[in-house]
Amino acid sequence: MIHIPLWKRLLIWAICALGILYAMPNMFYSRVEGHNDAAAAIAAAGGTATPEQTAALGQWPDWLPSDLVNLGLDLRGGAHLLAEVQVGDVYASRIDAMWPDVRDALRPLRDQVGNVRRQPSPPGVLRVAIENPAGMQQALTAVQALAQPLVTLTGVGQTDLQVTAEGDTVVVQLSPAERAATDNRTIQQSLEIIRRRVDEVGTREPTIQRQGEDRILIQVPGIGSAADLKALIGTTAKLTFNPVVNRTTDAGANPGPRNLLLPAADEPGVYYIIEQTPVVTGEDLVDAQPAFDQNNRPAVNFRFDPAGARAFGDYTANNIGAPFAIVLDEEVISAPVIQSHIPGGSGIITGNFSVEESTELAILLRAGALPAEMTWLEERTIGPELGQDSIDAGSLASVIGMVAVVFFMIACYGWFGVMANVALAINIALIFAVLSVIGATLTLPGIAGIVLTMGMAVDANVLIFERIREEIRQGKGPSRAIEIGFEKALSAIVDSNITAILTAVIMFWIGSGPVRGFAVTLGIGVLTSMFTAVYVTRLIIATWLAFRRPKSIVV
Image 1 (cartoon, helix red, strand yellow):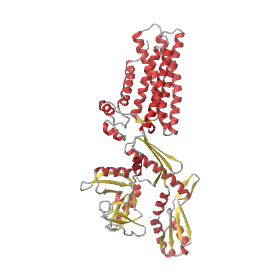
Image 2 (cartoon, one colour; image 1 turned 90 degrees about the horizontal axis):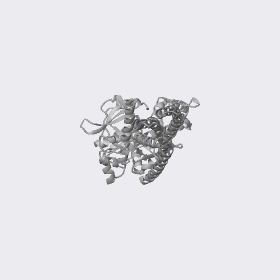
Image 3 (cartoon, one colour; image 1 turned 30 degrees about the horizontal axis):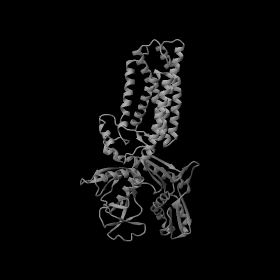
């Protein structure tokens, strides 16, 4: 008789029972993000529940596992966007912010260069005219001192600024090397901000990746439409802190050069004239949380990074008694008067917020503002009916594959084939259980991985059964033949499955999107098939032998 300790038997059956339990919600729940409440679940998926779905959701007890397998864009539907990042906007804002530094650098040279004034220039270029052209070399040297060295693959030697002279004008712009580095940083920052914004609203497993030099591909399953996705991503939440020049009720007032005329968010008909160049921006924020002000009204607490805190603290120390505009998306939401020096870089944003609005604002501020505008080149809404066709096709392929495997195992190995098929069914349940628990996304290639796993799962049983046949031919008894068959086939099973796992790991590591979906289901399927083929099948056979006690077996 095959000896399996009682604790091991109980552990194997417990794992199988848990796997079936965790896989069962997928039979009752609609394909949503894993909510227990039917209305909230279907609303989160952007659809409406049928009476059958609502009844199924209500039948599942709350105290049982309720995690579901998430469906990918190709199965569930969703939104597809292709955006082009306008990296030129970053050049313009970067150079525009250089003007105060250039002005301060030239101030000590007033005797050599005379008065300095900023001239109109195209975006990304700063032109500063000096009164005395004879002092041009000193001016160039002072401005070039503002440049920072760049570390490139060829070593240190390039700087981030290109400073030249055109007559009596100092021209400042980003160097070609800095432009290339800025392009890369802008795309990476945009990718991260888009990912954080999508993740903040609870959408799982989006595809957000770079395409080409300045394009980003965004695919989000389960979202209602491409317009909804654009609204989510396009919410800039651009926060700046600007000095206030004046306050007016004239909507057509001329703000003057380098100034902006912006409306007050809380006071209809009131406008603020503010300096265009901010003191600090939302990019310097490290945290933002919903809170309540001293009057118990919803507000948002914020905190700057060290650089932002230093700039914020220096400005408040030098401008006590002056108003300071907090600008959000080109609206002045608050313009408090600086009462004292504010060190530490912390503050609070107040306004006529509701609790929901303050929470949403905090989320957007934490996610950050997009560094550059995005132009939408392609947008598609993929309906769930297309996904249903894919699901039906995948289900049909799975059924055909499973039926073929079942008949093959029974035809070749008889009763042992039946026991292998039982283990195969448990294996499929374990795959869905693991996918549900880890929150993985099932795509059409993932279904192909499951179909492939079914064939690979019985491959281990074929090795074991063939070894058992060899031992029986050599005159071994039933129990001994089975014991030796499992022992001698184990090394071959482990070797073949390790290579499959390595392949899945490599595919997941270097692949993206559907390739990763295939790698996930393949890797999980290989692990679960090793467990069911080696342990579950052996336990089923051992249980059968204990009850039947045959003198001989036919494999």
